[in-house]
Image (cartoon, rainbow, N blue to C red):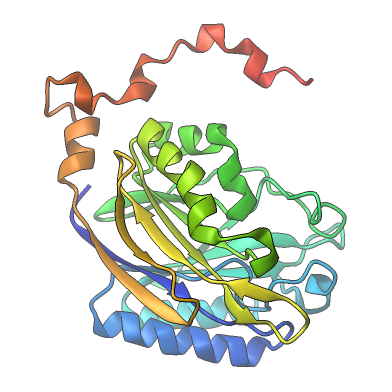
Length: 277
């Protein structure tokens, strides 16, 4: 990994108001580009606004109008842009998708693989854990509920992801986001020697939900690098120092303090992890 500058956007997205939400995304992307950001991550389903019951009404195919608009922003700004949307599926229940748009105009995607109890009647789960690459780092995406499953982060780390972007759509009723994140995001980072970079929707969505916001970056030893929990629209810009993760991943230190724990797994003992209960 090389030094890389990332940005995490806390934005207010109104349910069903795609044009207005895209304008907001363009505004924050412009602010990030002015600060020479390499990768910017927007929250879960920020393009249409997060709604279980209404997502199917504004879901779009990929490629489609919104994905092409995000691709255009990536080309204009020279950044990698991650933005969440409801993506049409063959079942009629959309995917919760995070677009990954590159400066050359290419668009890839991650589809949320682990759906919360309230989501399963309305969305289709994804099936893959793609690792995306830029010159300076490899990264993966875990969306909101995905982060509660340690196996997912481990798979990404074993596939050479060094950063996990974690876009959320967590409402106020779910509880204090900082307090909750600090219970498990440092563990995901520490156990798997990855950076975790999380962001959340913020404010009233115009349809009865209020989101609590929050942005947090945790380093590969589980330490908080940067945070913003001021319950407002905001851009958190962070330089990720590669020294620590390179020391762990490239075995630059003989100390067990910098062990890459996943290299010492014994998969032959873990059959119970994949048995259906």
